[in-house]
Amino acid sequence: MTHLTSPQIAVMFLGLGTVLGAARLLGELVKALKQPAVFGEILAGVLLGPTVLGAVYPELFATLFPREGNVAIVFEGLVTLAVTLFLLVAGMEVNLSAIWRQGRAASVVSVSGIVFPFVVGLSSAALFPGVLGREPGADRLVFALFFATALAISALPVIAKTLMDLNLYRSDLGMVVVAAAICDDLVGWIIFAVILGLMGSGDVGQGPTIGYTIGMTLAFTGLMLTAGRWIVHRILPLLQTRTGTGGGVLSFALTVALLCAAFTEWIGVHAIFGAFLFGVALGDSPRLREQTRATIDRFISFIFAPLFFASIGLRVNIVEHFDLLLVVVVLLIACLGKVIGCGVGARLGGMPWRESWAVGFGMNARGAMGIILGLLALQAGVIRERMFVALVVMALVTSLLSGPAMQRLLREEVARRFTTYLSPRAFLKPLEAPDRWQAIRTLADAAAAASGLDPQAVCTAVTARELAMGTGLGHGVAVPHARLDSIRDPILAVGVSRHGVDFDALDGTPARLIVLILTPARDSGAQLGILADIARTFSDPAAVNGVLEAGGFEEFRAAVDSRPGEPARA
Image (cartoon, rainbow, N blue to C red; front, side, top):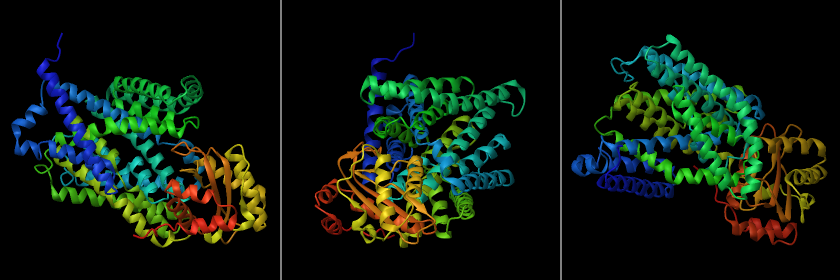
């Protein structure tokens, strides 16, 4: 039986420790600069790979990261495991229910955001395959389909992080972007699963192998999104009751994700697709606690994700395979296709032009998803190193542009102070409510009484919005909200709970400060500004504790005004 020798084990651990340590270190440094950690993790691989270390000390590089032999096989297996688990986390971000609850705007953005860039990418690859780097011998159809998918897909984790950084994640604009990105990711990965089947068939469009693979892929997708979701929904309460912590759910998630990965690999599709679909089924269950979700995310993001992203730089010499013309062409086609497609779609969905373009730039981030697609295509021989480098650069640049572009487009809409709209008649201390639904009803009654609105209509609108996505910000703050046709100016109601109300916040803390926000349906800028101001004001737990100690409305307002949030300017 083949086994690792003692020197090989030493090299394996030395290489893994070096990669993981460098990736985590540079990832944290990049995060301190307010950028996604993935940039630092890829940079670590570039420094340790053939681009830098391989050029300066080739013997050391060859020793640490051998290209052949048992150590290389083990490293490749760990990287495959890492990317498979990363797709589990990406799938958990997909909230299928949110797609149906966002109405026309999200639906139109989603359709136009995947159809338009897909058509642009498909046409470009078909008309100019040489300019776009199709290698001699690569199948024209497979290359065109791959390039179109790479342009159509979005990076949901990067998009969600960008919206959180801009304090827009819980806003209606944020929900439109998230719902559209969810749909684009799901459709994009299904398309790419079919492309993987085409790449593995050896005979495009003919024979039983490709038909079997596509049929099984679609059947597995349908099963996981229906019966799979139902089973997971029933199992989660049992696990959470019997284990008492997130450990039981974590073990369950990893076990089933690996089994699903094995199945999709067996039917001819990459293992990542099985893990991704199970992640969708798991993450879509309302019984998965945000705290448990965060535990799974941290476990994978702190260990496996850095290993995978650093491995990208270990594979390719970035300098040697950097083609400036190809990089510029790919970047322009990617940006124009996604920004125009999603921007026009948002406008057709009824959003103002400025917000529509903000949606387009928000959806433009490709991040890790674009890199993973490129890596799989590189491994399958559809593209070569120079196209892979162009896709990596495109994914990083579009992710970097997303946040600043959205911030600049919305800069005039995020400078409102929520205290402007407070009323002593809609201030409740203490707020007595056993759960968030009763808290919403009580605050809706207070807001309606202070403004002459129908309390049932207010409660119904806010409840529907809460069902789409929980509004717990963390640090003991929640912001249930809705947009109404019947009002011209924002209306707020504030409740202070003695023991806290569970709004399913990411940090698991119950909300003691609950701000119900009603804004005009045609003035989403008001909602964006108020939500951003509340998020900035109470980003520090000490700020929450300070206002909770206020004895009445005037003391509460004075305590809030004493902690002005920094204006969110570009």
